[in-house]
Length: 219
Image 1 (tube, rainbow, N blue to C red):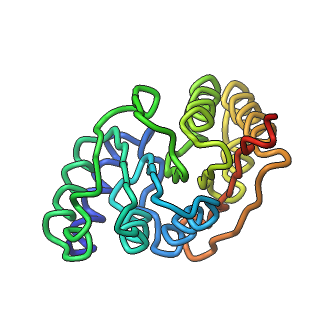
Image 2: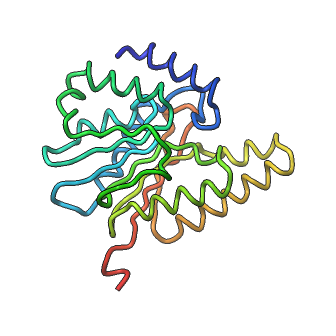
């Protein structure tokens, strides 16, 4: 699909659904590639189950499709029906996407409602966590941890300095919400993550790479 049509859909959904879209522009190919690199950090050597949450217009999906091995499975969870339609069109029209369509499932729903038959080796998230209520962020992070295989990985992003920038122009209740989200993420990321900066994105973003405890760590 043409980039212009993708951007028009994204802009339209930003205006209609800022809460779940989160940005004026879709993620750049550089941010998409950085998110997809989280899959490489999975220690599993056999067939992989990969979950992408909030793929939007497919910036990270494009790279996941390219890296998909013959026995791998990819599941996409996207709450926005228009983005689902766009993703379906890309799987129907673009040769690289079409070649893996039989190994991909798309769910139009909230991630909290996903019923997975097996855990996932790698999870990639494009959800704008800083837009959500604190309780929702806590629940989503708990769902990621529940869905991940022991030793599995999670890659997600947040815009650099976004909480401090928003807090500077917000009222007291919004500042408190942002500060609490910062504390929730700090606790979640402690001792099990690293991060990489992606400057070629609007806005620039941090990509966090999380390694969940393995079976031996829980023994």
